[in-house]
Image (tube, rainbow, N blue to C red; front, side):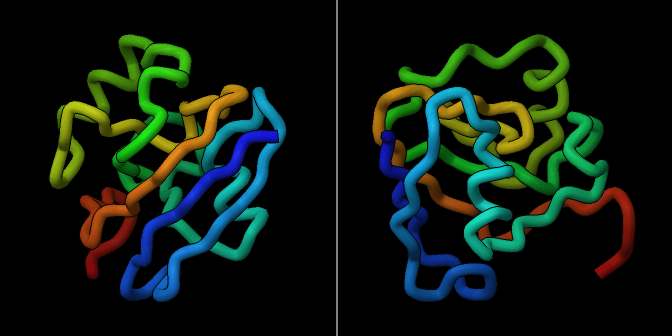
Length: 111
């Protein structure tokens, strides 16, 4: 069972967390299921970028992003080469280190 290390995030996970997930699980489901209330304004349909994460370790173990995800990622705040939308990233059998960016571009509401 792969280990997912979530780096500290000021609001969502101040101490960071170590999680476990079954291979084939969507990353956002692992985060939400373990009390990390990451935004998902489009209800996990790959129509926004609020669930954007950066995979600091284990990026190459994830299945490649599809074209729609790549198009959406172009709109994400703080895009990096190892960025993914957590609603689209399937956990494999390898460990991951995940960083939740400090800011999001929320298309559903003004902050």
